[in-house]
Length: 448
Image 1 (cartoon, rainbow, N blue to C red):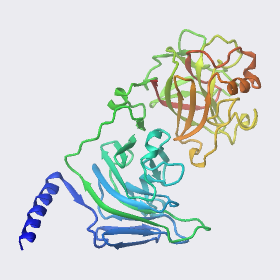
Image 2 (image 1 turned 90 degrees about the vertical axis):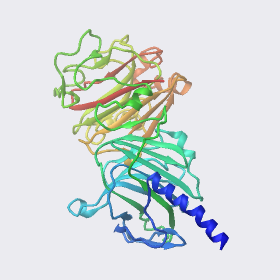
Image 3 (image 1 turned 180 degrees about the vertical axis):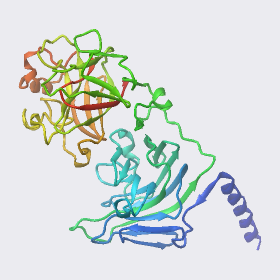
């Protein structure tokens, strides 16, 4: 009897603390009360205080969804997953019978036990695909523990979305497309040749909806999807807008003192090339930054019209003489399907996101968007001259600027006529006018 009352005394304060702290349990440990299954027919059952999801054949992705929607919250849960199974935690997610026949769509915190190791990244299920891959934050790839229980934390406060894997900061995204929706536990579909019966287990699912504070982690990469927006966290990390979204300040025509008086249009937060119907630089011409850069992280969004060609160049010195576009290393911006340039060069080295005429990009199906959709590009140049190109979260090119391989590639390219091509200590950023309709926005840079 003494032991019973002593245990009760220990139990009561912990309950009071939990209520005071604002956490609410989403899973009662006994059954699936408060949850609704949507889309696929994977098996969900409760055993020993654990929800167990099991794959079944010939079914789409299955989702066990809360019967309530949540806007601002902090969610914590634990899970353990089959090492060959992909899954995720949906949040601020929607299902409307009038949209894609009720297909679940919205944000997802990735569960990825594969060698890619993107657990903790943010995927947009049924909509925009990858928003924050762990290529943006590779140090977080080691946080996931395969074959063990893992703890996930999701913080959603306003447009700010953060994820943590076993206490390690994984993703930081700013986006306002969906401010509210349900939470769901995913059992991924399996291929025709895969054996059913793979399992994922969840426990200790709790949520907090008041007294919320966003965790501060200086230095983490922020994927800010709000057009031309700069958050306080980005500012503290040294990110600045390279184009302010409204004027020509900070830019001028290549080889000239002022901005072109035609050929470029600023409207609706976009910096757009006006199609000329002519060839390269037959309209307004290329534009370059006033400022020069050496080691940097350049972010930009671009949108192509059908058949369009353009590029984002870096280390542009304007010393080289050319009858066409100013000379520099180029992140290719191209409609690979409709523009003939994609079939020129060697081994695809003139295709989207590649290092133009030098290095073809790695091909990842989900890195590509339909023509007319916005793409997120990024170029990272480290102080040791290691360079990386990104397309919609995928790292598609990396090379060592000035290295032996780089020089060999230059020697067999169209750039071999310019001594020391691409090896300047610093240079300008350039947006190319190739005579085709292309929109740019959210152009940002951080010095490294």
